[in-house]
Image (tube, rainbow, N blue to C red; front, side, top):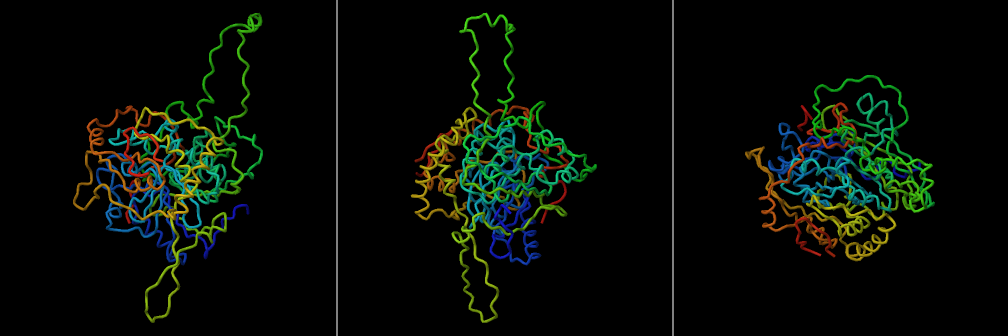
Length: 578
């Protein structure tokens, strides 16, 4: 078996994986407890939620969540945010396409949304004990992929949706990782992963997925690039509202520097036999009809449009006449630059795993397959000794028979390589400016020495200083919803500076672009939201499963530049329509 990650009941990290959250935190924690009891566990070390978390603090947050107004609900989160309840297990999550964008905007680099609940941000790498976890938030929309993070309160209707669209600048950072990763996370599936599992069984559950798979439109190209680069032992996703497993195998990385993989404009799989006919669930309402439909003629590969750009018209000059022209009139000889390299390729020799096990789960509803418990070891077994559990201290002096010793806890920590990459890209990061241009990709050869230099800084100022542990520094920013308050309002939330983002920027030595003076924010608010295109998601872009029987919906050095310059303060519900 090429992957060293094993299912162990004693020494592994006990992890619960959940698909789409949709605000049903109480039901999710109850389900984890029940599943743990059935397995003979006293709980889990970590809960991972694969998106659509819905961290809605109050009714104003709800007003800018991408869900049709008639289906907006506050859900369970306000009670956890206010401190009325506390998460039963350490919970980390990525975002999907139904989120409280106003709150998550404050935490671009990740942070606690409530005690014991950690948001990874648009892209991140963290270590939980011996496991190295990489996550990417959002869903695929090709027309927004190469744009900057231009969204800033007050949001237009376009901003509310584009906020959760995957951006190339975040993916680029993940594609520069050179150290092995144990667990990968994305909301929608990596493109073409269905070809590595029982596709016919998937077509029976979701008949419309078959044609999207044939067309190369099922799944997220960026997630495919990241998975094929990092080759983690496990990759977990959600979004499609069904359980699906697959095993992706790879050739060992090659030492040949010129060996590249050409990017195909059409990535159609091999022909597939006709599946049995299946009927959809008449009780499930698909809420993504307004934000998942591709524009006429748009393909999944919008980010590769240059490869299919129209050729210039011919001049009409015959070859016989052209031969009589002076040499100065001859067209320049074509330059053979070879095949275009696939993003993230070739894989560095330091990433040696050749088997990735994929699991997608459903949303939290009765009768659905939305929870999976597993016990994981890292690809590198030595990490178990380098990152042991903390010892639990019992202060009980009871003379009653001793109970089984409680398991210690693992620590959630920053990742040094990711911090170095963060410092490199913070120099050119721009937020809130729709006219800004994303800096060009310099290529891995150019970025590698920059990352190495910043890694030396991180080792000196963070690692050796003992500051890798993620601090428990959650603070309330927006006022939480309280019983008796209105659950719907017609106004957007205020913009807040989050102390966690300020602390992280100070730790890493980058500018806090998410800070602004009250005067600056008042000026933005007075100007109002930018104009919308009027077409919403009709501008196109597909990410897979756009009509598939109720899938991805449900409720569904301080350097850098900001459009509004930040000051940088230092170096059991669930049912119905879901």
